[in-house]
Length: 393
Image (cartoon, rainbow, N blue to C red; front, side):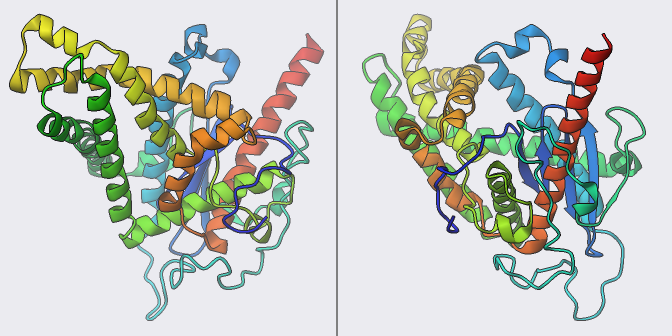
């Protein structure tokens, strides 16, 4: 498949494995655990794995439609925070760099899909035929990586060794990011729409919500475009592209090598960016149906108080919006990537990925492949343990 294409016609299957980019690395997540691979300043790859409760261990209410989307979102945010903490601990080490030598591999041209040659880059990493076969992944085919096993379930050797001040700083950064997101993508669109359209009323609800959604999309595009100009964030976006290409390669049943991954698109139908855009679209319907204007009328609210009620309603309805968006993008569209209606519905999200991804280099693809192989190995071990338990029962 040509780079940048969107075809899925020769996929063998659609995997449930997904992931996200972190600072100088990639996190991949499966049903039974997740793994993050980080490129260190020395040029090596640090890998850390964490377990997750299996689907059978989750309470029934977490599997309900709409609810499962909210649960998945919260868990994804928690895992992303942990993976980012691991990445920060291992990217910027105190090893002195040689004069005139880049600290990170391929840094001269992070968007170059070819990059400099690496001695182990073409070692084939089998995806294990397909998920249907459950074949093991040969561990000796994974690019050499340094790893540490957690001392206990849920423990992190890297994070436990980090000073408390670094952990607190990370937590504060996440909180600031959350507040910035609410301010830019919730409060600001509501305030500007109120200035343009006047108070939200029952008779202008649909038009009001359409304007609000348009402003939210504009704010999102401008924000992503701006942060993409930051060199470190541009590299994160390239690792995001590496994650997608590795998943594509795995779903097509090819050996997981950087060269094979480069054949595929950096866009993916089940990307979180598509989910993000879908929440904006779903919010138009949910907010238009919700009788927010009638509720404000019943309270006799006007001016600032009425605007505050609209803002609060957006936060209250956000779990519903996320839950429906999950059902559309993951449960429905993710299983039908070739459906013409799916292509239309997810087209805006795919186009947004042109901003949130970059063409990765070989070193970035190695990180994505390493995480994917580790997660697939977790799945194989879990399948074998379940089979052995069933045979011994």
